[in-house]
Image 1: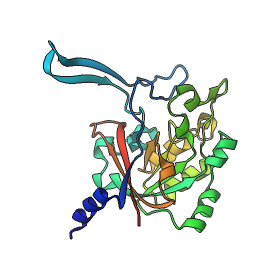
Image 2 (image 1 turned 135 degrees about the vertical axis):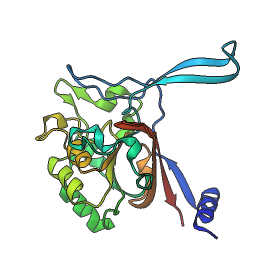
Image 3 (image 1 turned 30 degrees about the horizontal axis):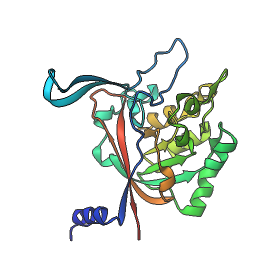
Image 4 (image 1 turned 90 degrees about the vertical axis):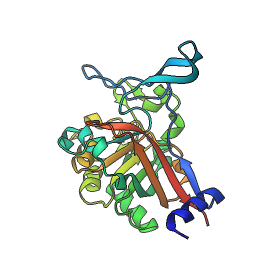
Length: 258
């Protein structure tokens, strides 16, 4: 039996489970909110063209309006100034869109402190317990934040000082970019950086370091609680937008069951 035949058979019989990591796209999907004078992305919307009526008697279809970085989405290197001249989303090799994943669970810490930051020491301890991060794979950072993803205010968790969501420290972001074997980081929050990362030195270190190193980001993921610590395979399918800085994507995970 070929590898692909075995895979499709395993999906059919449930020995390989396909788990959707994607947030549905609606007008209520949370989006990042930047302060003035910065520009902001459009929320997702549908505009009906026809629906089995005089505009088109046998068909239903819509125009869509959305930003590249709306909902579950893929960050390409060119998204950040440090990655200027790097890959746009259409140039990401398709072989990098299918990759193993490690899931690091820090839901308890994020529940106690919404500004919790992942540090190098946390990852080293996780590796001691679970094995090395996958070469060419994803570090999926679980914080439980997907439970808030149906409400813009709860998801951004902002006050007068700005948003408060978990993220990654400056030192850890630099380590992930320069030393870790992963191809990128995936998170449940609105972006790969902490809500308070605008005040870091340098600001937004995940975007700056990882995208500058030619690595990638996956954001607003769901259902990471259903994945094992090691062994899942992630399929991330962004639209190949020429000159695009990123794209909404369908993110799936394959999990093998004995």
